[in-house]
Length: 578
Image (cartoon, rainbow, N blue to C red; front, side):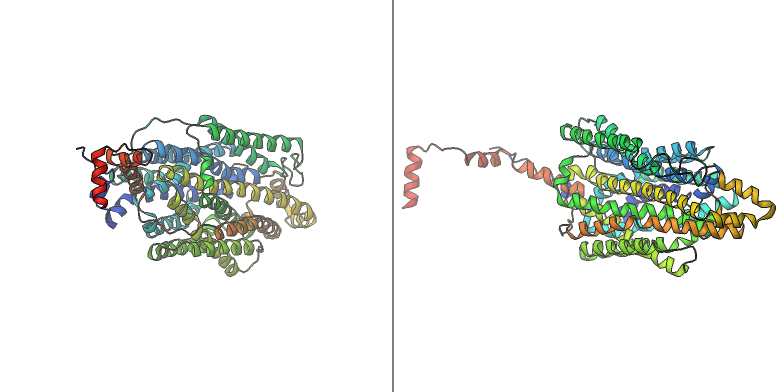
């Protein structure tokens, strides 16, 4: 008589679930790794206008310093996610930290905008890994139902880094110079590597032959890069004079070639993914309604999150004449909204198991915050600006992490990596495109406004006496101006110009926020599971083992076979019937 082999999940069932303390210890390295990533990004946010001014860059360079990081983050995120499903996730996370911090430190030695943009692009490669892998590793050790309370910790770390980063960056810039902003994350990175090695213990994944979709990686990179380069350059100034319009018209030959190339690369990418053995982004994921709608909603969240963080800092310095330190302080209301919403909603999701109402409210707040920020001027009451920022931050806090959560809840455990990174990818892509479009709109708007207010600028320059030639030369250089250092007569004009341009750019986020709300409304309201990814994987293996044992196989084959009954068995059956 054959013995039934034990189910594959018996080992998982005998192993007790991690305690709250054990989970916190395991998360400590992940939290610090995310803190390093966000600190290195946010610490330079308030000093970017100063950096671009010192490196003689213009508004396009300012946009590309941000876009370069977002672009490589978006491209590398699905690659890291795919690798997470194939190889050791812990080692990948540590590798991402090393790449990110080395590139960040190297950026501190930049001598030109182009050099800074290049290092920021490498920085984005590491950031993509940290963003994707932190979500995947969390799913390995915490169930979706319990993840809400720990999502709050990630929200708190994000808020501390986002509040403390700009403040620290402003202080460092004002005291020692902006280059030191790029070195401050190094000691935190070393500590994060040690903590991850010591505290993070994830289930061992079975070894299997890996196949990397290199052609898909190249095609995706080409498609996204060409699209963003076109968006950034089309309709913007390419020469030094403020009054010169761009040579790259929206309907020029350059635009046709760039857009056509991006579309062709995207079509080829889809064809390759459909035929690839191990696709970078399995297109079958889009058969899952939850995944598809979450991707659509994530695009608007990315635009709001990245666009606000970039252009609100510019607004504070260029439209309100704030120093980098003051700009960091002035953006606290937005981070406060993100912190309160992220921690509060995370706790409520864990307690009650409901997530959809909070996502709907969050998307409504995204619409409200974006719409209200499109009305601000250089002299708008700062209390009102703070309320608008708080609403936008709360909207981001309610939607960003929970969209990843609902996707992980419905995705097959074997595809958690690519599904999680897929949502993060489209959020980053949305943010990248959003920042590019908003930056292009801002640059074009500023050019038009400067042309319209030539007489006001000339009058202001004439009132400066012997300082007029210096400031006239500064404006003709095309470099991003340092508004806080301008004489009052000139400063008022440019504060009004930049406030008008920045508020105009926020209008771009509004229709995407409306689309996000519609996508969230139609999300299937599926209950959150109480099993971790590792437990779900073991459970599915147990189901497979159940139909693999001899007894089970005999039962299954009997349904499709004709039994031959001998005479003795037939007589016994007749007797039983009587």
